[in-house]
Image 1: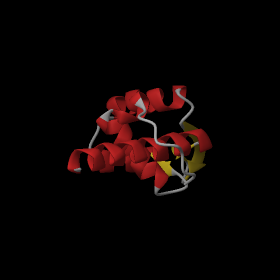
Image 2: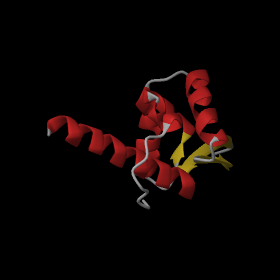
Image 3: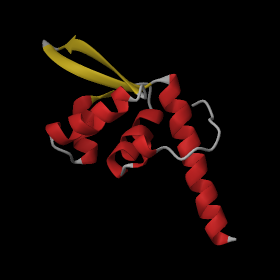
Length: 100
């Protein structure tokens, strides 16, 4: 993951979107159903969270047919990876400042 400058990001900060970015940052791509299962969200709730990330340019979507079923694969874009890394750094700075 490319490291971004520390920057709090309102789009990423929402709890479910932060979890989505964390999962996507750990893999090249993740299938929609896997995200749904791991996050425990309904299809519509996950779609709503993903639409925010896609509109911000942070997540890309790719449809593929596997075993005669259409599947949606998601991954962080370069911009998304930078924004996520910067957001995590900003959160770490907030925590460190609170501990000082």
